[in-house]
Image (tube, rainbow, N blue to C red; front, side):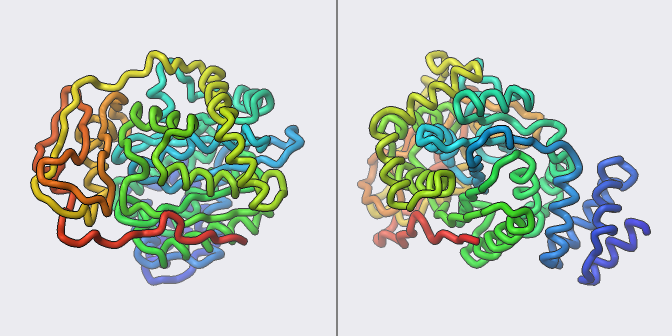
Length: 425
């Protein structure tokens, strides 16, 4: 067996065996297979796809490449959540304490962002002192004591995924559905949860651009879950405009707190309620109506916010020291009309250029910068009316580049539903 034969086999659209995939992945981990060889295999997979069996084999090999977390000592159903990510997506910061306040155990290992804005860990680390790199034992203790934890992925957890993802990011193979599915599911299966909810973003500001690909990805991940006797639900949600009003790490923490206090934007509040109700239904084995009532009660009576404070304190954070830049400029519309489209991906890139995201994985993030939207898609604006506020420090972005993210016309544009559909096993 050799890697060139395996590459050629996939190039010719043939199905790889488990042994061939093990040879390739394990060889890449031990450095006997080089970056350029694995890049070729990943591109062949990206172009020619994988069968359901191949995807399962790949997930299983990645899962078994490192440690797994055993949470069986907690005698409750553990429900994990994953988002495929998007501009302004701060749902985990709100969702985890909310479901924990409802009595559902919510363990989560989150990642950092490489592209526009930060990942969940970058947002949490915008809180000074917040410690995300807890040991597995500390992770377990926190879950046992307060019912929730959100930490960075352990170095020994699914190391194959870490190495492969870094390569995918620089070889144009990130958007392959089989590679996305195996990456997500290997990490979720390794983190010890019993059930999994996936917020699968669809649209301009997401990895998955169209609903058909989203349905296919959901089906793949649900089928992988069945192989491991794990219930998986995928909720397909809109990412054709930023979620909420804030984009940028400290700003998104602030907005998450606003939602937990009952003062947040309607779109992200509504989404969190749907996601939380689903997780609570799965975790407590109650009806969706009962779960929804419990979620609203805990959001309205302050329990969810208090659980967020418990999480922050447990992991060493100090919200009072969080910094948001005081250098703020207002960007105003250059015409009158409807905001018919927001170029969500491009707006995320503006935040990255301000310093709120990474170009290389070693880059540091400035948590204090970002954007506050004043208008959303469908709003009517007058010439010289404010569109957004920009929080900046050393780095600047031309005004024209920001204005280009907004298409203002005589038509209001399409109104996308916040929730497209829920796909269950």
